Length: 222
Image 1: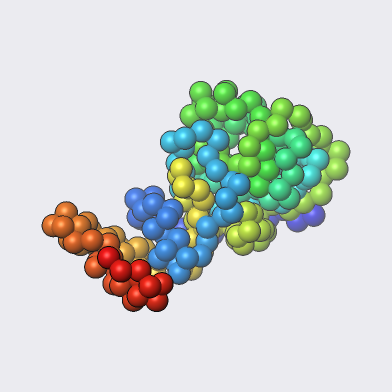
Image 2: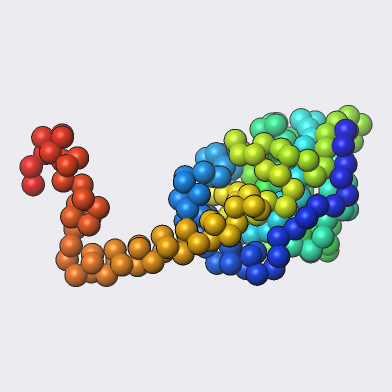
């Protein structure tokens, strides 16, 4: 069991620049990397988050390490919890949400379930998870870590990596790749804007993306 009380966070300008990008664009800019698996989705449509990862490993029946992590969190941190994909309990509910809001957390990403979903929605706290389960957990089998490298949704996450999420899902940008990812994301956005103008002018996606060789290989004539 390891608990690191703090970690190096990205600067505010980097966070704001990443916040302005969609997770899908960032995923593409990193060479189609960093996207968490399909099951981890927003608890309710419209939820968004962006912030440095405060990582937790715990479970599958105990949530004490989550309480410790919330107590250590700084404003803007996003709690990223490896709950081992366990869906038979909800280790996060309205009380932890109230504590997280009071401490200024930016949101929760958990490879597991939560409970008190309606209350969480009404409190306006962004949560990305596998779903909901009303069953509780205990605090007597506290095996786990805080602020160590974890794997959540199939993605390796280190403390301080930037987590960005919306209705499409969750992407993780390693802190040391943030500047390069932002540059590639900006280039991708510029290219897509040019695509839109050409499509509005009547060009087809087959022409625009040079798809004719694929049609020829499939013996499809238009």
